[in-house]
Image (cartoon, rainbow, N blue to C red; front, side):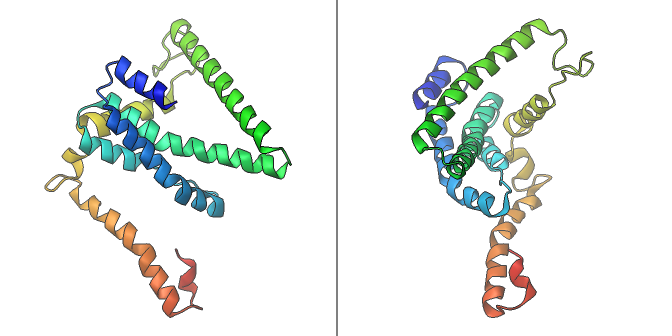
Length: 202
């Protein structure tokens, strides 16, 4: 899959250097365990989409296609890995051996990915007005529009024009620091007062 990724990056005009592809995979690899622990405990998955958009927006401004590729490989890779893991957990509960479970996942992924791409290619060639607001059958592509809008906001405009010093939303950057310090603060309070209700806030 890594080789296919490099081939896609180099074979088309993506404006996406291979080293950024590697960084996206490192981010997904680094976050899969802590976010997996959060998901296992709370059944909520923390998204990396904004973090990946910030990183690529500052690193390669003005490249919307590169932004979408970095976001996909940095965030969706982690999300798919956790989905894959949750399927393995279900297989474990159902007493399915790990090897057949793994190969069924691989084969299903190949079939589903191929069929999905084929259906998508057919739809774009045969459905008139697809992804337009007035498409008569309701094929308006809302998720695609969200992804495309993100590529404009984070890729073309870029976070530097929005969140850097002196820009309109520069004050919002301090919330990253607040978000980082808040769990430490609540942890220290729960150490000092172990029976207080505040220990449930983390």
